[in-house]
Length: 236
Image 1 (cartoon, one colour):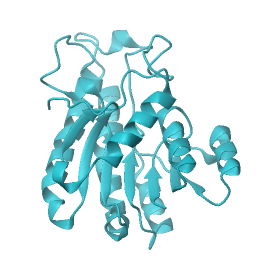
Image 2 (cartoon, helix red, strand yellow; image 1 turned 180 degrees about the horizontal axis):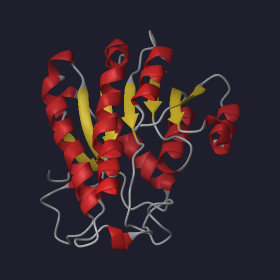
Image 3 (tube, helix red, strand yellow; image 1 turned 90 degrees about the horizontal axis):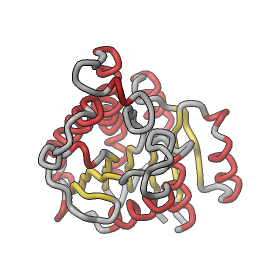
Image 4 (spheres, one colour; image 1 turned 180 degrees about the vertical axis):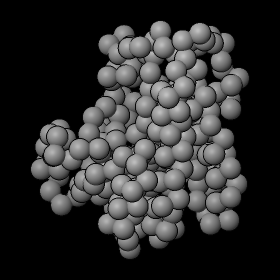
């Protein structure tokens, strides 16, 4: 039984990742902003007694990350998955994510949620990851983060914040290799969630189960992996 740490588990892909790992018999450490309102997550925990613990955490709040790290002192983490993040322009506010209408404050918030917060969280929990047997660090990014794949333009805030995270992931894959830690960037696909919208192509369950399979194939030999939920490689 592995211990899997997952952020943003109250809904969408994060919730389905927690469900998938619990169904495989693993233990899950989940986070969300408001534990009291995470009803679906609470029901999932009741269905798998003793194997799901949920902690409050907000990627834009360093104090909450420090508190989480303190609560998890001495707890090995085999698989670290940062799923939480921010998106704009798929189903709502698309007009604010194009050249000529960009908002500095919103853009900076996206960077904090998508690029800075995930790396600081990984840094806080790195002692736990080193204690684990799996030693895998996974960050859910997106295919639009790929510079080579950008043939459509727009989506400035989404693309740049996720591309920045990818650059950090590439650096971590080099810096942490000596510790035996494998690092990956995985795109969940266009998912039917609040941000993805009803016109998206796949369900959160389909995405999550694919991500779990990709993570299972991650080793130190293919660290710096950038792939989608089907395991298909994405150019950086």
